[in-house]
Amino acid sequence: MNRKRFGTLTLSTLMAASLLAGCGEAANNGGNTATTGDTTVATTQSGEAAAVETQDVTLKIWVPEEEVDITDQMVKSFDDIHDEFNITYEIAVVGIDEAPQALETDADTAADIFYTPSGGVADLAGKGLLLPITKDFETISSDLPESALNAVTIDGLTYAVPFSPNTFFMYYNKELFTEDEVKSLDTMMAKDLGDGKWNFSTQITNSWYLEMFFLGNGCTLFGADGTDATDCTFNNAAGLEAAQYVLDLAGNAKYLEDKDGVGGSAFKEGNLGAVTSGAWSAPEFREALGDKLGAVALPTANIGGKDVQLSNFVDFKTITVKSNTAYPLAAQQLAVYLANQENALTRYQKQGDVPVLESLASSDEISADFVAMALNAQASKATNQPSIPKMGDYWTPMQALGEGIYFGDVKEADLQAQLDALVDSITGTLSE
Image 1 (cartoon, helix red, strand yellow):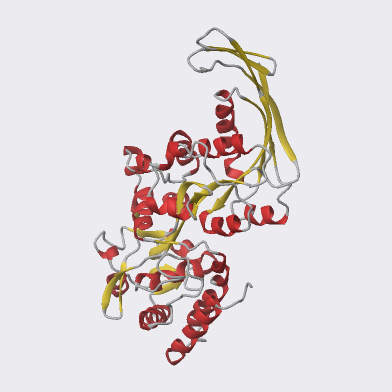
Image 2: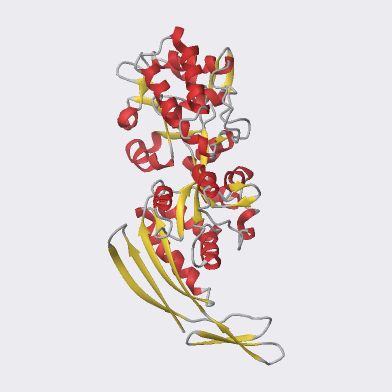
């Protein structure tokens, strides 16, 4: 019988610890097994006894706070089916955006397994901090969309296990817009919703939202596949058209900038027709609007005289393993297990993370959820967020451009010069 201990910790404080005793049977070359103490005794088909040592394993796992309980149950289930390991688990609370930096700061004390956005996977892998995921990955790889696989594959090696797409789409108020009207941003902006109401809200001042106009109009960031650090076309003719559209939108009295949650608040109060956000906003929007709430992919926009589909960044929430883990086999297997079909469905039901696995995305349960369908629809129209280290030079200059446009510091006559400066900053050597 193997004794397996589970603990849940914050970054600095132990929250809980418990003991779980588990025993089981396993097949070995068609024979029988029995476990005694720390040794598994296997009887082969020839009747010979072969002792297999049980490996003592200690794994530290970092998860967001809201996932502690479900992760605890998942690792216990993993433990039940892996008698070849005698595992001590420590579950610590570290946010998905905090984990990569914590790993870089001190890889020796970092978790063996942690969550990270796919956008940072290439950078971490390039620094030698991630272990390629090879053990058991084939059990789910065929169920992953190509975009998810591409996001975590570097030079032919897979460095993370995707479990949920992460992007934004559009919520709308069914009392203010029809299903047909929300297909076009220009149709939406042309409608008169009455005094005290705004038609549309996004975050021009946020570089994770602003790119949708540029990418939608055919511009590229770091080349067509997001890997060329010297290439950004946000200052070409299509980029200038996109910037002009944003300038006009910012100056429209029917537009509301969603800065500091202003747009979301107006939407919940029934004073805003549509707002861009992600699945994380669904609970509060459902509570506020009830049956009036709708959700769809981003609309088209008439940029430069043509209707184009707005295309934002998409990345994926992933599970990764640090390269210097003392237990690479167990860590890889657990990472894949945490993202399998059963656990992905549990995560969706408990936390609202829409599964990336195609078998679940097309299931009746997910198909009946209009928020999940909107997320998946937009993910199919979105652009994989580049994961090369140069991506770090995009965020601040792009935010500065958006703030300059929204607050009126950037005029129409300045647009080309501002775009040239933007591209120079992004493709320059700011982080070198």
